[in-house]
Length: 116
Image 1 (tube, rainbow, N blue to C red):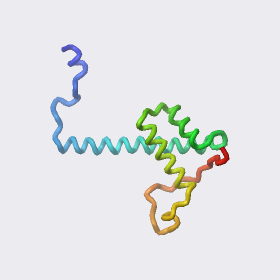
Image 2 (tube, rainbow, N blue to C red):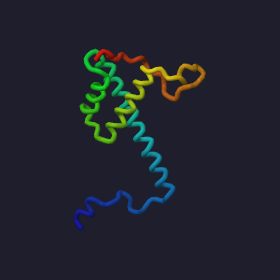
Image 3 (cartoon, rainbow, N blue to C red):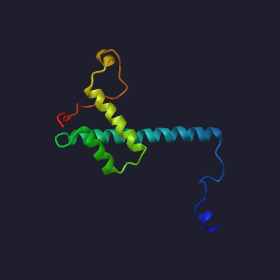
Image 4 (cartoon, rainbow, N blue to C red):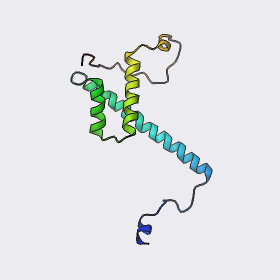
């Protein structure tokens, strides 16, 4: 009984309405997406900063290890970082058409050590 008062099963005294539960899930999804974007931006900074010393894949691994990012978030961050790097390195047919707007904001060119 004592522990139930200290550690309640829920922080809410009653169940949320279905509408409130839906809004809560949407807010949580937005927050998680913001965390992922921040990690990807910072991993890209690691790649750029360490380009002379580490290959891009090792720089991403180093970022994940140093930041202590747990799975499955670590895999998501690594994959999305590689996608951004791939967009910068590998030509994409649709990107050749200048009239197609991109959803991603324009980022500065990355210095990537390709010889490693």
